[in-house]
Amino acid sequence: MNSQQTNSRIEARPEAPPYRPLIVAGGWTATALLIGYSATGVAFDILLVIMKGISLLTGDPGVLSLDIDWVLSGTRVASLIAGTVVAVATMRYRRRATGACSRCGRTGHHPHPESDHTGAAGQDEQHERSAWSGLSGYTRHAGYASALLAAAYGGLKAQWGLGGTFGLDDPHAFGDDVHLWTPGLGDTAVLGLIGVALGIGFARTWTPRFIPRWMPLTAAFVGSVMLISTGLISTGMMVAAELGLLEPQISGDLGGVSAWVFQGIYPLFLTWGLTMAAAAIGYHYRTRGRCAACGLG
Image 1 (tube, rainbow, N blue to C red):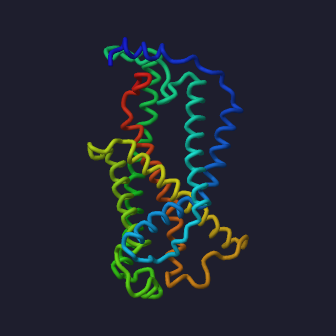
Image 2: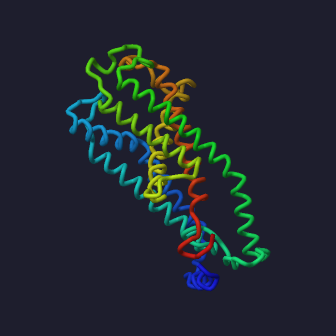
Image 3: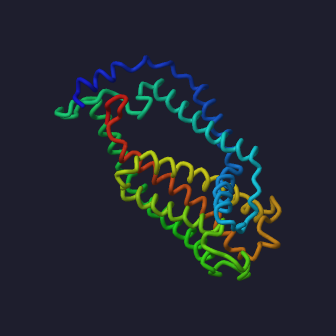
């Protein structure tokens, strides 16, 4: 794209609306409420649908109750989608109102490729790149950390599906006829494997050419929401129980699963979700290229 095409795109931008802090605050508040409501159980809703489908295909009843409240699950999924739409709309409004591109968030005019980048726009772009380069390394490390956590979770579930007893107080906790394809074991191990691939791909800034970049980013968004919500709520409840604010959540009959598994898995979910989100953000900024809307980048 030459400078003339870039300038024509910038000049074609609609006039920026007035910046109103109440609109932005209202948008982010609505986002928090919608996604907060979905976070109360959307992770289990999605997993139950996956396990239900595998159970129907294999005839294996699985290791968990697969009864689904479709109305409640549907409202949580719809709330997640609505919260995402409101967040995007709020972000784009704020960008337009502050003179930035609503699609990519960049500001100013793109300098000519042969210029010395000493103008205001060139300095802004160099400042943005400099600021981001300092964080890029951390997001790469987050990708590797995410992959390790995903491997730990997937490995635990896979070895249970293969008949392993690590993490079980009762060797027959899941019954005598357990397979890798048993719903709740092999399927979640596959999700862990996908998490490993995402973490390494984000860290290495690599995905197969036939996979568009929005696919791993969407998977990371959904995965992060599931992991962070489950990990945050469950870890918070465990901490509150330790402080005497709630009844202990991990007590009594644990179905033959060792208590340390529950005590460790929820903080793992929280950390996994946060590192996946950080790695995905880093991957997004490293691969976004030139904006199709304003020509900057």
